[in-house]
Every structure is written in C-alpha cells, then in structure tokens.
Image 1 (spheres, rainbow, N blue to C red):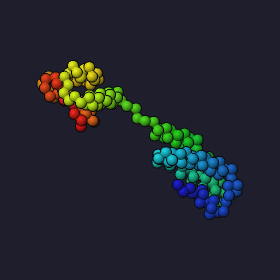
Image 2 (cartoon, rainbow, N blue to C red):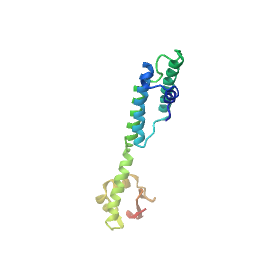
Image 3 (cartoon, rainbow, N blue to C red):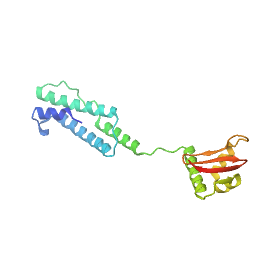
Image 4 (cartoon, helix red, strand yellow):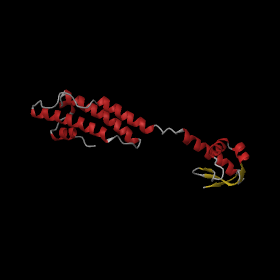
Amino acid sequence: MELRYEKAMEEYNLSYADLSEDAKVGIEGIKDVMKGVSMMERKGKKVTPKTMNKIKTMDKWVYFEILDQIHGTDENEDEMPEDPEEVMQEIQEQAQGAEQPKQMTEEEKVGYEIDAELKKMFESGKKEWSIEEVKSAAKKTYNVLFDTYEEGDENGIKTTNYSLLEQGEQTFVISKN
C-alpha cells in the first residue's frame, strides 16, 4: 500500500526528524497498524476494506499535517480521526477470527461419527447386515435408523462416503459412495 505521507516527505525532501510532533505520532501509529496488516498477509489473510479505509484516513491526516507544516498553516484537524490502537485491535480481532476453526454443530458431529462407524462396517468385508448386527456394531447409526425408520418406506443412511440402505425387511446393504 502506497502511503501519501511517504510521498510528501520525499517530494518535500523531509526526514522524520524534520516533522512536527503530531505528524511523528501519526506516522508511528500507521507503522504499528501496518505491522498488523503484514502479520495478517503472512498468514494469507487480508484485512477488511473497512479497516483499509481507516488506514487511508490516518495516512491522509498525516499527509495534511505535513502540508500544514510546509505551508505554515494549521488547517488540519486537531486529532487523528482514527485511533491507531483501535485499528490494531480491529486487525487482531480479524486475525483471531480467521484462525478460529468453525465449530461443528451437534448434527455434523453425529454425521462424522456415523461415517466412521460405516467405514468400519464396510472395511469388515461384510456387505449385508441385519438390524441387530447394526445395533451391536454401530450404535449411532442404529439410533438414527431406529429414530427415522418408516415401515414400507426406503430406509437407510447415506453419508458423504458410505450408504447403508435397507434391501429386505430389516436387512441393510453397505456400499461405498
């Protein structure tokens, strides 16, 4: 990101030491915030456009501080419109939010457990299972079958990887999807 204050310093041949105290404080705030942005980018994440706009606002304020100094005016606002500490906090929250894995719902957990049970059943080499065999080999799978069983309907369970479908009266066939 190109910063306007850096261009102004270059254009007017100013060093950091030449700047007013307000401009220096603003630059230090921007540098701190930019370190946070760099940290996020190293992790492959990007800050939100809202946060980037806050950085641009901070940069613009410092730029106008430099122009005030060059032209001997005092037209810039008294304080930086964005608090660098608050912007840093925002970036840290974004980084933490990006790092936290999505919490699984109870339904998703059960789905993964059923898939694991079906995998074991499939790997056993046995293709046909009675309801009682399912009950003893795969408790969660059996409970879902029992809770959703409809006499005369197509009954069974499908996961991403496996299917356990009723082929005869309370006889189930397992297959890999």
